[in-house]
Amino acid sequence: MKKFMYMCMMLLAATLTFTACGSDDDDDNGGGNNQQQQQEINQDNYYKYQESVNVQNAGLVTFIGEATFANGKCTAMALTTVYPTKQIAKYAWEDYQDDDDAANYTYDGDKTIVYRYDDETIAGLAYLSKTAVCELVKTTIQRMVATLS
Image (cartoon, rainbow, N blue to C red; front, side, top):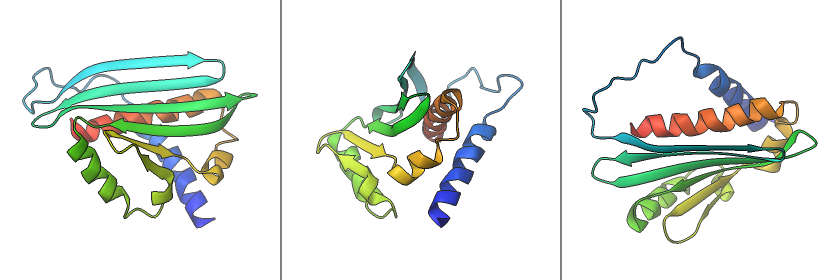
């Protein structure tokens, strides 16, 4: 129950964190990272948000957030990270193994790591509208990209 409440609070905080009145992005790219692409798909029973960033001295990292719905309620949600090299993915995989929820991660042995939300977390999202879940997925991916920018 403690983990459930923590996840609910994190989801709420994530949805409230990214409110702004205007753009505060600098036009110059002094850090060497630049956004490569964004893609958003919003269908009746499926939502996907994808964003890629070119990380200096590493390469292109792609984050993909997906959610599926039935009767307007979230039934599954996953976050996928595609790393530029197998070595970086393996390093990240080893780091994830120390997490409390390490069982939720899967690694394809190449460059992709997927985090699938557990049934308890999905059940906690049942009170959210599809719009709110889609915004949560998008905000989560944007925060992941921001950590590399």
